[in-house]
Length: 213
Ligand code: E4P
Image (cartoon, protein in one colour):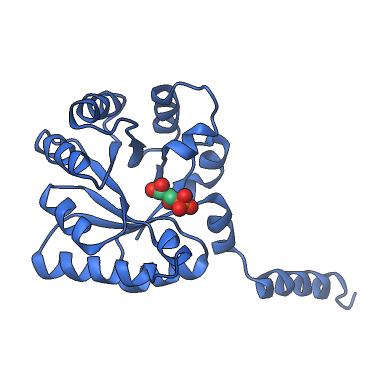
């Protein structure tokens, strides 16, 4: 399973570079970089890590999305143009895919949106599992349904679990066969941690220091 970092912070990307395959961003994440030019931010990320970098369009209609998507894709061949699962977003996905430009279809909350994204040649589909859990629905069930639909129909679109709220989501996505997951820094850090690892190390170190001399 590919692991992406859900951030636009260069220091974090540098720090966790060895453990991630790429980066995903969205307008909320980019807004944390203040007035930095989005194209410059994406270029900086592409220069920091070699792997798929999802960069989201801000426009909402087909013509503007297409223009914006092409401008983002021109920054680097690793850029995956992130588009919403709307009629215009899917239409743009189809157009960009036909030109060989990688895409990531975002804000996916239903299996039918995922089915349409695959038919439009999306490279990744991003089901938002945490936001579904937030409204009392089962986000991981959506992952399961999409993985099944893609397998039965032979679609090559990769399932990228997004809107991850905890390590349990990481485990469930991996068990269900998601191709990729994107993690906020906080959750990636939690993936390394276990209290028994910490206390175990402390004990090993103390026992060694107190050895018979
Ligand atoms: C990634 O592609 C998504 O934009 C992100 O995971 C959304 O996460 P959130 O629901 O925590 O904002």
